[in-house]
Image 1 (cartoon, rainbow, N blue to C red):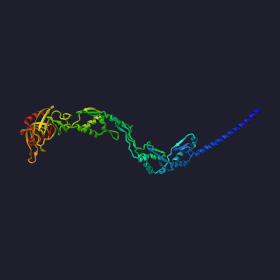
Image 2 (cartoon, helix red, strand yellow; image 1 turned 60 degrees about the vertical axis):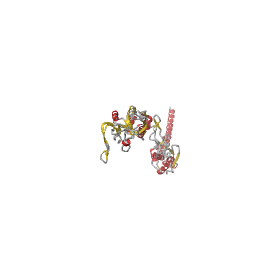
Image 3 (cartoon, rainbow, N blue to C red; image 1 turned 90 degrees about the vertical axis):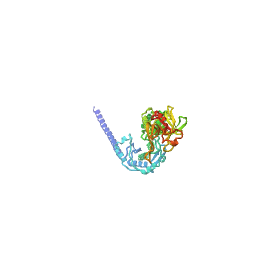
Image 4 (tube, helix red, strand yellow; image 1 turned 90 degrees about the horizontal axis):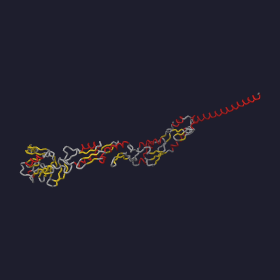
Length: 481
């Protein structure tokens, strides 16, 4: 029992000794590690942590001064490559613009922000920082280099916006044209940013340094304009003339356009031009007409107040309103008061009219294409102040037992004549008309040359009575040579 107790005692002593040795070793190692950790933490209080990247440069373990040297050298060798829309490249070097590094607090701020005692973690995580590096350059020199770029000195073709275009059946979107004109303000801004950030490239197209069209094929405003114009082109206006005159999409399309804000508008001048051409073709008041006389001869007449006369101002509004409402209508155009005739064909006075031939000194009254009355007459004496005017007129009014009064004679202060007639039938408001003339001893031939009237058409009494009973206001009267 005594021997075993002694062995146990010796074993316990050895165990206590070994434990103390181990604790001493561990304590010494920990101290070394702790000292190393603290030393590294102190080191990284003035140096950038491992895996630190600033503005794309590896700055691990470097002090601020070394990093500054990196940026200084970078600026010395810096060049901005400008790439135009065709892929052509030009360089602007640091020397071209006097680019220089300026010391700043930016790097120190990055350093101060890091936790130096977190250095063990930095071996396993990457820290990418962006620091605003201060630099200086000559703005005037940069501006000069930009102005000298081939893209800037080449012909500047302005962009064109997408717009509606009529393809023959409808309006479709015509794509925009980009052009080659530079937006110099945008270019200066982008170039300044590129230099400040030391970017290697400036792509003029992707950085939107070219002037851009206001509207593109994708702009909803263009599609909306197309829709509205196509809606207008659905209108159909048919004029009932001697043959139908139709305004449809092919005509309307030429009247439409868009303004700079892609708002649809009517080209007023184009609508007016169409109406003028329409009027030139169908207006007959005062126009020259060629026709056949009742005795089979060809004659020509122009002037007077009878015939078609389209009211183009009123019709303009009617057309625009009908188009905007997309109407399909058949109509007569608007005419000026008194601006209508019997037919749209030629001659426009139809088959009921009175006619006076000044050459043969003969008149006819034709009803429904048949001569209802005819006789020789005496017309105005062939001197300027008495000649009977030619033209096509509207018969105005008639009156029994009328007194015809001439103009005042300046020398006497009295009317040139004062004549009582049984049957007065007015042709013009200036005093020309048919009437009986019992003072004429004969009619026809060349009697008018010596015994002509003051411009009226003198008729035998009985014939004037017959005409008076037949003719009514509105009947056309043709007077020709």
